[in-house]
Image 1: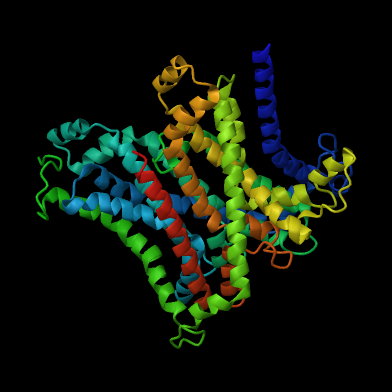
Image 2: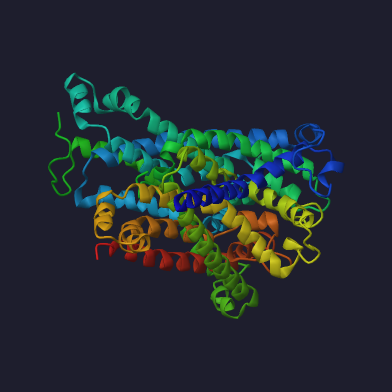
Amino acid sequence: MNRRISRTVKYAVLVMALLATLAPVYWMTTISFKREVDQFALPPKWFVFPPTLEHYADAFVNRSFGQYLFNSLFIAVASTICALVIGTLAAYALARFRLPWNLDRKLALWILSTRMFPAIVTAVPLFLIMRALWLVNTRLSLIIVYTSLNLPFVVWMMRGFFAEVPRDLEEAAMVDGDSRMGALWRVVLPLVAPGLAATAVFCLIVSWNEFLFALVLTQTDDAMTLPVGIAGRVTQYGIKWGAMSAAAVVAMIPILVFALSVQRYLVRGLSLGAVKG
Amino acid sequence: MARLGSERLQGHVTPDRLLAYLLIAPTIAVLLALTIYPLIYSIKVSFQSNSGTATLQNFTRLLTDQFFLSALSHTFVYAAIALTVEFLLGLGLALLLDSQIRARNVWRTLLLVPMMLPPVVVGVVWRLMLNSNFGAVNGTLKSFGVNTDALTWTASPKLAMASVIIADVWQWTPFMFLILLAGLQAIPREPYEAALTDGSSAWQTFQHVTLPLLKPAILIALLLRTMDLLRVFDHIFILTEGGPGLATETLGLYIYRTAFRFSNFGYAAAMSFVLLIITNIISAGYIRLLQTRET
């Protein structure tokens, strides 16, 4: 009897937690499909309302959200590729070579420590530097910044994945006449491909979600990303709730799909290997 | 063919080591250019007035600036409350999911959703939820007969802080829960079996077995969250823009306003150093606790 009660309580708590988690997201999604008259209805219409796509058309056709979406995608993909290429090389070296004076360990920790700066600390000088280089309001400025944001992360994630590959495999390839880089390319990289993919997804998520640098470095439609575009609509008077929710839903969907695909590596990624998940 | 770094000849350059330096160099170069150089540049700017003359004013002004001091206290209040609530809820959920649960992975996945969302989207979600005209929170309360006239959330100075904390707790409790759950699942079974044979109560087992073994995971989760909470910016910017008045202006928002609304880069740089130093002191404390976990 007691057992049954405690089990019922357990599931009841879980269901409540789940409602609190998902209801707000669901609510925003319904707003994006509601006619304005239904958005303001009281009591709130949770389930039954005539759906409309007008807000999606409004946001992505009449307003510049199509451009922001393209900018977001372009910047996220480009900065992810840059960070992966540069960071994977360093990660391989740090996983495989012992350097004098413990340099390998010290460098790895130093690389990690750069991730610890609050963004606002570097946002102010980076804005001034980018302004001096005439790079403000360009996609390039954000690609550069996001590459540096993602690098420490790539180095630590990939270093862990490389460490899990037995060394004999490379040594065998090198005995067969491969150079070290040839062995890395032909033998090791295929083995860490899942890890590489997970790391790439993490970088995409970070770049896609980033707000502060994008806000500071892009003020025109040319380079503005989706989060900044959404924020710009929110903080004005006479908010178009529907268009804003539609844009937010579009910003949310790819991230959810991506994030769920790397669940296995989530803990390792978030704690940079500090907690084995 | 070189043996893989088995010999540690101090400073001796072998072809392998040369290759290692070459492979690491681009990463170091990017990080120097984009984090260390801006930091040094920032130090320079913070000792300059707006016209570029050398001055200590940016640092002396901090001590008497009402706005700075209130932003500092808002930051600490926000961080302390959010951290406490997120930790307790996260630990509770982690313990729940660590017990006998059907379809554990489905629950886990669904509970993680808020953490994945762009912070800006979280801001939008809660603006819609807490809107006093058509928000689902007040709408739902009303249908239960609660008088919601006083619940203006983001429009009232008192409730605005609660609003931004609610949004933070909603988004980041899953993070705590995830790290703590991973920590719980890494604990071996033996100590629990020993506690069972000793006839310990559930609470005693939790106190003497679970908590000590979970300590590293707890500290890492708290460290990562604290660092993020101190620099909070995104969803406060969307939800309240630091308002109403200055009720929810944290350090991050005040620094932003100083630099990009008033173009006072020197003062903003000086304040961002204070934020960096505070973050470092607190992180160092956590890391010391982590290192003494063998006690």
